Image 1 (cartoon, rainbow over the protein chains, first blue to last red):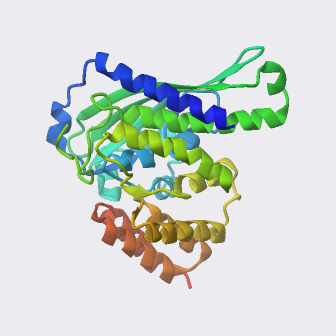
Image 2: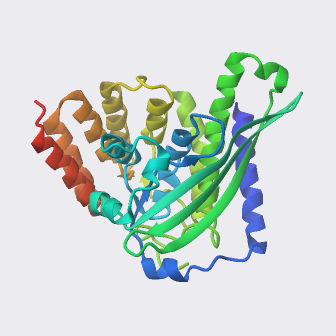
Length: 207
Length: 122
């Protein structure tokens, strides 16, 4: 188990050193927008894993809050949507921006899509892949102020044969959830690619 | 219990690393918040309101003990569990606490509080 958690961190380190070669994004509209609070809607799920939406949703608060933003309490938001008849992520993503701003008071909305979530089995080993893409939209103007995509990979130690045992499949889902957490971090945090520092971060305005 | 914490440590380290080398420590105390939400979604019914209350209170106590701010949403989520447990007064206090600590939450917290008033739980 310990080993499994080391891999994504190593992958991150690789990403960090690799960041230098990727041209930085254009943050002009983002800087003008100056969001203080971010509403993260339950992600659209394009994978075949039913649990992916809430696995990813529950990993997004920490990295975004640590960047210096107020993150709207994700479970309250989700519950509020459901009580108002928007039961799945696809419907929530269709909600008008002005309505979201009126109800939640958010400055920006993060729309996430899960492109991949789960295991690629090989006979002796397996990889767990979580691929996310995201779009941050200014709630007042509707302008897209940031877009990004990332892929996080964890190496599992059990292969296809073991994975046929139910218990191992459950364990693989834990690995997938940890991988989702790494993907969330990778998506929003890298300097020059992720979100800018927010008002609650001591380095706000320096990037 | 242990497992949750073990999983969180490398992640927090990575977050701090990515947030910039100057920032030596996280802005917030992160304990059970995200893990508890995940458990509630992945195994419906596994987090009773009382269990949720206990975990959020544990986080608040540890945040205070380490001199760190509770993470955004922690008071609000605790209020939500109180609401589910039928304790409207405690729920209101937590929504007020979230709003005081994070004024960005005012619109949503006021909405939660007015919902309490509309349908008072005893």
